[in-house]
Image 1 (cartoon, helix red, strand yellow):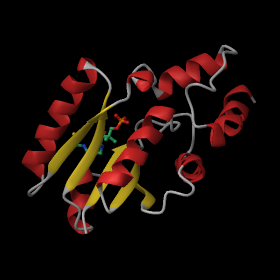
Image 2: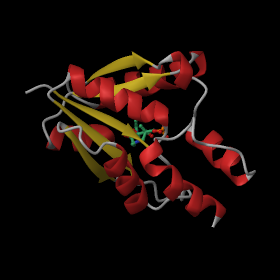
Image 3: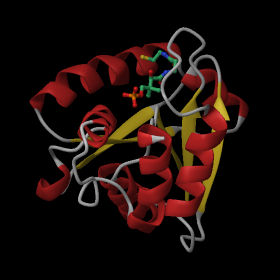
Length: 159
Ligand code: PNS
């Protein structure tokens, strides 16, 4: 069984994330979406809220599992017999950052491969921080987040 882990902050999930999950679910037998618990970086949405948003947005994609983890990604992967990391690439800035992470993970882990999927052009400008900023300032986020979770995200940000 070919499993891939798709790790990230997902604070909150965007249309770009969902596109990578959908496409990943076609290339792998199972995609494990892993929400990082970072005690040093609080974020806006709680871990439970992030997991719940991803669960709602991915409803109907059978081979997707959502988990949260704290600690080193490679440790989680080794414990759970996963050797492939799936990541999305939007631009050259992502590339620089992801290249470093992929190489560090390769040094830390045993036989870890990072596989990149190029974002669809319409998603290449979307980020979770942009979603939060646009929404806070009263902008329309319908083009930025999955429709299934738009109202929940709005409610959390706008109150
Ligand atoms: O969505 P993000 O913030 O770009 O995701 C970053 C993430 C969660 C993939 C990365 O920070 C991570 O893997 N953190 C877990 C801790 C770890 O393993 N660090 C060393 C790898 S560089």
